[in-house]
Image 1 (cartoon, rainbow, N blue to C red):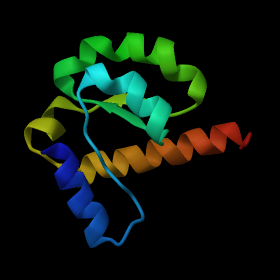
Image 2: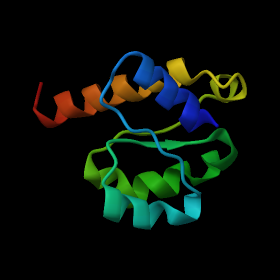
Image 3: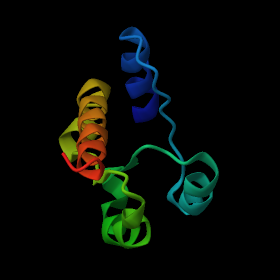
Length: 97
């Protein structure tokens, strides 16, 4: 549901972004096969955050837990904005800016 809300916002702004949601047990496969630009965790699996950072942090991709209130309100616009900002921030860090 959140992914579709985020995708709708991206489409409305003609952003070249693809938002997908997957079960946490598919994380290894998705990261290996699809190489996402960011990893967002729903608040219901925030307990996995440290494990995900330990396992994938070296990839230089933003990893964060979606805010509970934003998730509860299905605020796709705010979550998408945060994801874009985090991606830009990581990119700037990797470029040494």
